[in-house]
Image 1: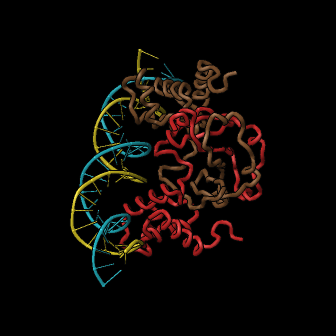
Image 2 (image 1 turned 90 degrees about the horizontal axis):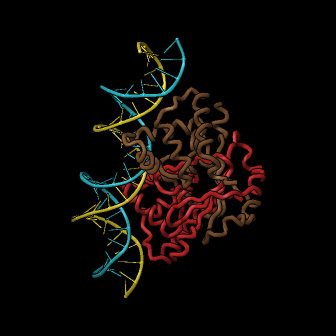
Image 3 (image 1 turned 120 degrees about the horizontal axis):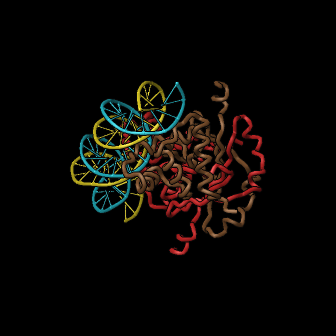
Length: 149
Length: 149
DNA sequence: TCCTAAATAGGAACTATTCCACAATAAGAC
DNA sequence: GTCTTATTGTGGAATAGTTCCTATTTAGGA
């Protein structure tokens, strides 16, 4: 069983179904953008997706890719990779710790998890080397935002 | 024992020591920037650090903060919070999975870790709610970069 | 105290991203 | 097939985060 890419055709069907269910028009552009995202599981940048899609749809505009990706994100079809906003953030705390990130206000809170720290990575990661840090990121609502709900 | 902020004065001494050991000049600016980072454990942005430092050092330039932070990062004094580069990246893979990030080429590879997925978060995170995703990020060298070493 | 390489200030430049307005297009309901 | 309306292309302009450039300043060794 291929884990990453079980069946592009099937996923594309799913995509159409979801679009219709959400009242999103299934346009050529959206289809191609989604297909590009399915095909390139290496977490491309928006620019990268644009380059890919342009191979099939010469007239696509970068703005459309941005807009479409934002739409997909809103509807939970894709997710942005562990990034909070566009600003780089820093950490003086070099000790082993992990992060809770508030989905609403972007606040980051540290937490400790020794049970996790003791765990060994699965075998499937052994082709990588020089692993210094393993780090858990959890998304949720911080106590302040929770109250405001 | 206060875990985050054991003793600012002591940390500042450590800071000077490390700078000297590494041949870094202990400038006013660096000192203030490091102090600001120690004081604000909420993972500020560079802009945030700049604002803080400016309270004490009116003439500091934003660029200095950027350069200094980069220097600190190079020398392992601080660490950037789970972010790869400035481009937003996406993920169609909504299933539970985790990321290996190459410290050299920024490649992201997915891996699976069911043992981790089954774990329950520690009690210290229970004041947060609506936690949908917990996600491991591992930094290391991908097999391609490993060969080039 | 003097000297020199390292570091800084300030502003310009660059990059990723978003926004805009409006005409042209095309999806999907009928 | 027709109609309505969401979506797209265009191209430029705005924004935000970050980096670059150069003249000037300064830390720290001699």
